[in-house]
Length: 79
Image (cartoon, rainbow, N blue to C red):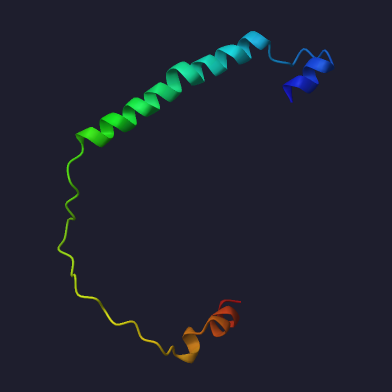
């Protein structure tokens, strides 16, 4: 959009220095802080401990679905 404004000699176009400054801030501030935050966050955290005890016993999944649990019936009931 800015190149169209430049080609039309519009006063609404952002100067190239402003765009360069925005790209520099992105490259030299935003990206390094993101990487540093990810590394620090990875190194500070401990092993995950779930808040409740989980069961390791596999559960049986029923093979036959009732008619109202079939995808076509669900489609018509949902509208």
